[in-house]
Length: 149
Length: 102
Image (cartoon, rainbow over all chains, first blue to last red):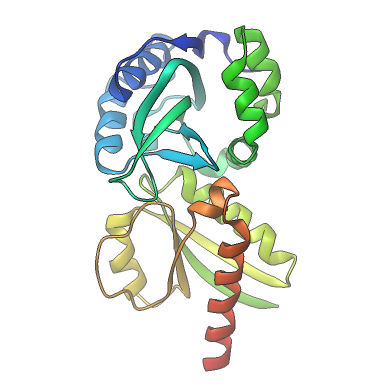
């Protein structure tokens, strides 16, 4: 199941950077990522943003090179209010993101199943809306049980 | 079996390019087409495609401007599921074009 220490409900954050820093700090405190990870994710997000429009519902999947990662994991937060991330498709476009998945991927070849499961989550808008509206971490973990490996 | 080599490009060369590659393999297998995919970053795409080993490029991050020697296909719709059919149609169109030339 998801590491509940990496799940945050209704985060209060002013910017996408703040969200990445907060979630990244959780990853770092558990040793899943290296010290360089957060800065690398922020840098990547500036150049190649990760906002994804799932129909009219938007998520973001910030991540970076596997060299900054010790162990694959996912940190998830819902937000007190939507936060602006730029679009992966057209970086100049701003999206109001409601759920953020911070990804740490060590070796994509070994994580194919996880990546496929994640992709099926992104493609399920109803599920994402339930995640957004969840009232406990356990509920989020339950909703995303398909990510279990 | 018909075989094609795809260069799958995303920002980090790992996460979404692997997702696209895997899903494309499955979708094409149903159509009797074998896809072999290599993941890459946008900055590597032009040089790799000039090497002549790839039939077409799929990308989730914008590609740097350049004269790509093979067709390039935006794959974000395939990632999110919104625009999946259009993506697969485009892939089939490109594949049929390649086959008609060979």
